[in-house]
Length: 354
Figure 1 (cartoon, rainbow, N blue to C red):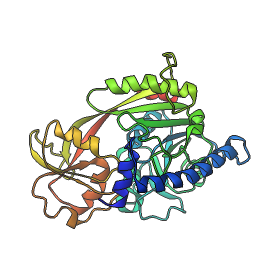
Figure 2: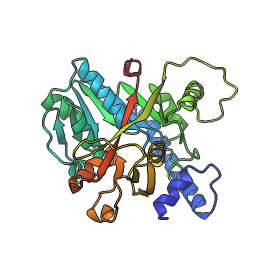
Figure 3: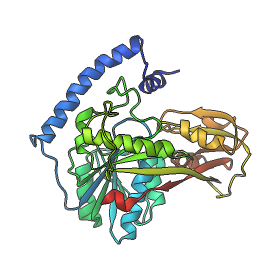
Figure 4: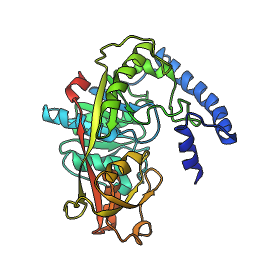
C-alpha cells in the first residue's frame, strides 16, 4: 500500500490513529489557519473576487476525491443549451499535459482541439459529450472566463471544481456531497478529506447529495440531515434541530445504465466475467455497480488521473470494464476488449439553478 492510499484510508476512518495520523493532524492545524485566513479576507472584502460579464455557477465540494461533479456540470450545461444559452465550462485541467497557466480552448462547442492526455480526462469527456458547450482549461479561472465571454460569445460560465477558488466571483455556489462517504473523518487536509472548515457552509447556495446507488433511501435521509446542518452552518451534531423543508438541498441520483464497447459501441451481456479497472478518486461504488450484474475476476485501481499505458492492461484476458472518465484515455490504446459503464444521472436542474 503506497503512502497516498494509506492517507486516503485514514481520511475515511473515523477511528484513525497512529503516528502518521498524528503527524497529519499537526499539518492540518496549519492548513486550517491558512484556509480560515483566506476565507476571512474574502468574506470581509479585504480581497475582492473579480466579476465577469456573465452569470457564473460554481460546482464544487468540501472534500477531495471523486464526488461526482462531472455529471452534474454536464447536466447544467445541457440545461442551458436547451434553453438557448451559450455556456462555457472552465476547468483547471488537472491531470492534463497542457500548461495550465495559459487559457486553452479544449472545445469551442463545435470543434475539438486537444485529446484526453493533453486536456485532462474530465475536460475532454465534457467536450466530447456536450454538443454546443465550450470547454476551457486554465488555473486562472477569471482569465479563462473572460476569454470565453469575449472571444467565444459565451453568456453562462460553469466552474468545474470551483468552490475553493474564490478569485472569480460566482452568482451561484453549488456544493456536492457523496451520500456514502460524506465528510469522512471530518478532519481538514491532510489528516482528513476536508478542504475547509465550517466557515465554508455559509457560502453554499445549493447543496447536492449525490447518491451513487440503486436504493436512494440513505440519500433522502441525509438530505434532511444536511438541511439542518446548513441552517446551523456547522458540520457538528444537529440531532436536536427540528425537521425543516430546505429548498437549498437537492438529491442527484446516479445509477448504472449499460456497459458498451468504447470502439464499437456494442453492449456487454450481463453475467459476463470481467476485469474492472479505474483511476478515480473513490472507485468503490463503481465496483459495486458492476457486482450487481457481472462476474468480477479482478479489480485494479490506479491513482486518480492515472495515464494508462499498454503495460497496464496487456496481460488481461477478460473484457475490461472501466469508467467513462477512464475510457477517454484508454481509447488511445485502441484495444477492442475495453468497455465503459454508462451512468444515468437524474437531477432536477431547474430547481438547482433557481
